[in-house]
Image 1 (tube, rainbow, N blue to C red):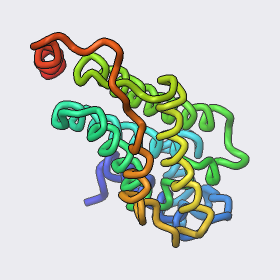
Image 2 (cartoon, rainbow, N blue to C red):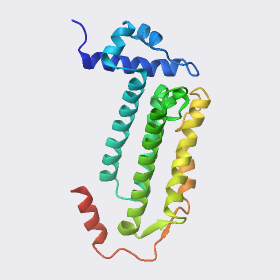
Image 3 (cartoon, one colour):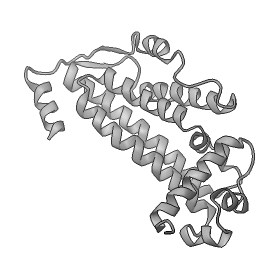
Length: 215
């Protein structure tokens, strides 16, 4: 029995991710991808109208994986520091487990592809940074803490540290893993990151906020 359409689409995306990992620096062609999957190029196009749509499928997989788990982290972790820590570790661990797909995050695999794909990746990172900003902002109301530097710069500092590790991972040919020494670096990043806010949360206010977010 031939694979169902959804199964074949999944096979194509998995093959694309494997080729991105196995051939860093090489441009993926539809002919090579079809050979990897074991189908004709015409069969590829029955599932994806263009190679750009295949890349978009992988970007959607990244978005779905990351942001669904971020929601769980926000619901499970009580403090802003732990939320930020878990969110960034999620991003780094995802990159480490999916080296081929990580080449899309750094833009390395998108050389010569449409600008729309590059913008999708920009939007993904912007959305992630916005989530960090919200977590840090909530710390003032929930915990009486605020960042030692302006909020946008604070969130960008954390994001830049993680993005740098991911870029090093790709540049090293996947040898320099992004989670190595991250716990030690994170401890240093958090040293002085938060300070007491001028206004402290009123009694019961943090609990009310937490209850409201959980609902």
